[in-house]
Length: 166
Length: 284
Image 1 (cartoon, helix red, strand yellow):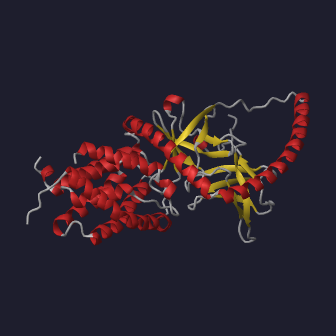
Image 2 (cartoon, one colour):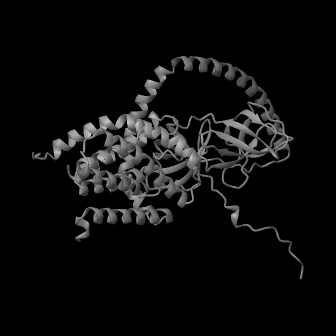
Image 3 (cartoon, chains in turn yellow, orange):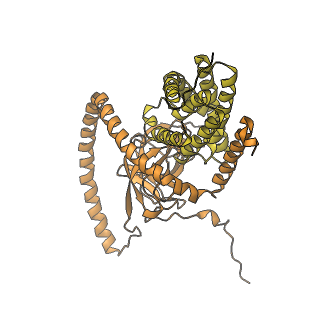
């Protein structure tokens, strides 16, 4: 899938995240659609697409969020880099890898965003946010990431089919 | 260019680009760029939000029908009580107007001007209580303007773009508002809590507070006009060994379900930080 189609998809995801996801909140956390899509794509697609999507997705998300522009892109790029590294070393559709990445990626993304917020002068309560926002987000992401990964795999096979060699 | 063709090379380039963007964004240098980029996103966001809000409101209304019936009974009781109070207050108003006329009292409160706005989004990070409205610089919105509903204060405008603005809600942990208890005229400060609730602090121990007391803005500090409703006291926490007592305050606004708000555009916040300590002038 090209980067233009990716940008459209990521913009839709960012808009849904700011409009639909707040209604699905559990305590302070909500499903992080953007993170799950970036992890899925980083496990499936070449690194150029994975990193570009992580960067574009982060920027679009930050434009609709209160955090400084680039904060989400930083976190998503780190997650995409690790996920893409694993793609070449481990079987990409191993669900255990997907779940582990989602668990670690959710925490890393939140820590990076809180770090940027704290550095920009916003008072951040780390313990409370990790317990009240990050933990519910991790649980919701773990519940939803498998079906989202399946959808993204279908999209990848539809738009970027590859000939598997034995 | 060779670096861009390798995995670590592209990662490093995009990582540093993000870092630079963060630094520029924090300093405010990217504000015009962000403003232009967010225009199409804000338009689509507004449309999607209308659809989502319509659907979720319908679903939630069906789910909450029992609660709504009970709440309706409570509200009817409250309405009856308030109507009685209204009649009493009208009498007081007539007395006041008569006395003010006699003293040629001129009120300093000028008519307020409002701009109505739709809520088009909430903060996506989960770490802040922030919302976005579909009015911006081209509608005359400026940073610091109070945002209200008919149920009271919602927050203050913290960032303005061409067609949208960011509003820091009063229940954000970084928000504190100078307030006054309407009945006793006791001053205090209402601060947002991490749990999204409101707490009134700095209330002297000798002041008597009761659940149901109405909390309004005091206007002290010059950041907000006086008299805007914040909410009602729901419980009081008072210990003899502390310097002040605290009270939990419930806003009448449900910040997660706001659809429409109004921005008071005629109010200009005053920055009092420029004033130094008082210095006595000595005659030469």
